[in-house]
Length: 333
Image 1 (tube, rainbow, N blue to C red):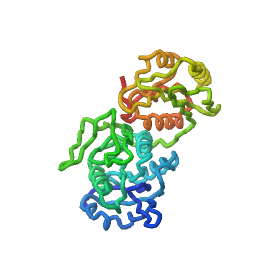
Image 2: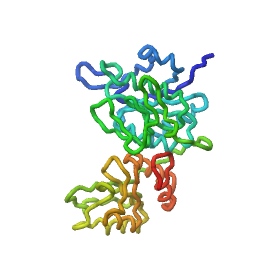
Image 3: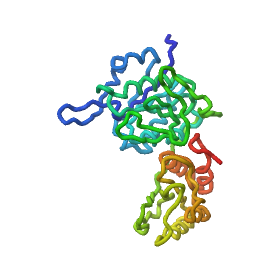
Image 4: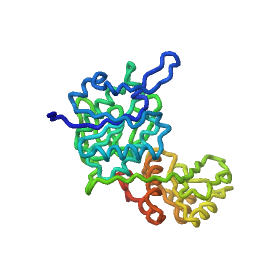
């Protein structure tokens, strides 16, 4: 009987699992995971790998139904595994990590998402090291949903894709690293989420959200969210500022709030904590009843809003939970 850890490897597609078509030059999915130990023989020294391929697709096509499939797959396998690695396309990897962090309450094993900027089948690829290091970290005592990329392990719901063409493609602007891999594996235990209670999965999401992105001179009268929209996100400048002159936005926010819609202010800035009260416009929005996303990433904020809308109909409960850290995604006051 093997004494090695058991790691569930879930392949969902993405660059890490593609080969280049020699005629067209286009990257296409490849099922080389069927011969995984031949491709990356070192993995057999780290863990016993159980491979599942629920779907293989471009990550831009992902939605809540795919997150539910991943959550249910992990739930069904959780009793026999020591960790999970999910290979995933980079474009929406941070969204999936954030969604899973809310879904998998008190997850008892590491759940590590990773990907690559170049396929495993090519020279000078980052796929090999990302893959091996993710499997290694999935055998460690890290009970949260993470992203591993380049040499860094980051909290999944604190991570953003920050580069299109660098191997160091992901960053965690408002939270320190969970681990760094170099000659040694350094795990920063004080940064890791402390879980308590039984493992449970929540997999309802509601994407009834409209997003208004401000820019200099924008016409807010063009923005007409339909009646069935339950939440409206306003992407502001900096700490939470928007234009007031020649704008009808405040009056429309008042109407949305009166119609029991959630209104959330988020920032186009990637780093730092929002403070809309610093400015006249933001302060007025807060006094009217708008929420703001604090130091959450856009990916964490949007998936959290979808998650809460999926769980609750009571807007008071949604408002309270949006301003509460559910899985380490928010630094509370």
